[in-house]
Length: 145
Image 1 (cartoon, rainbow, N blue to C red):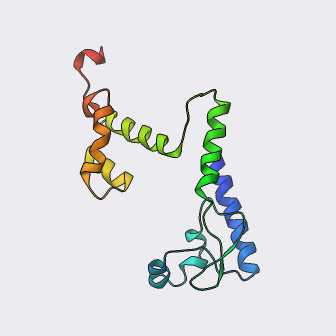
Image 2: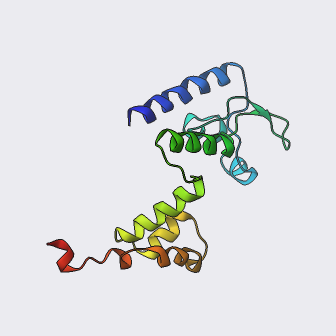
């Protein structure tokens, strides 16, 4: 929590600086920007992990702050894995698979997991069921002893 609070405070300061410099705000999908016209300038719509620099929106020509590039996340995850002594390749996708597997093993139902992962079809989510060690969080009474 302290690290997240620190990050939120950083984003707030950065947002104030961007506002003072009259930049356009956060980049958004065109449909969202149209529906919520002032949202991109609101602090609550700023990215928690924003890009270090502003970029020109090709649609509007405005200078906007995008989210951090996915490669920067991957670099951070790889570095953390190295520091932890993990020799296997660790990626954002590996973390996603681990999350799904642990959720199922912990008793989450497949529909909840489908929603959390953003899958349109439950068949996509069912891929994770073949790697669970215990069937959907069901614990034998003997395992509880």
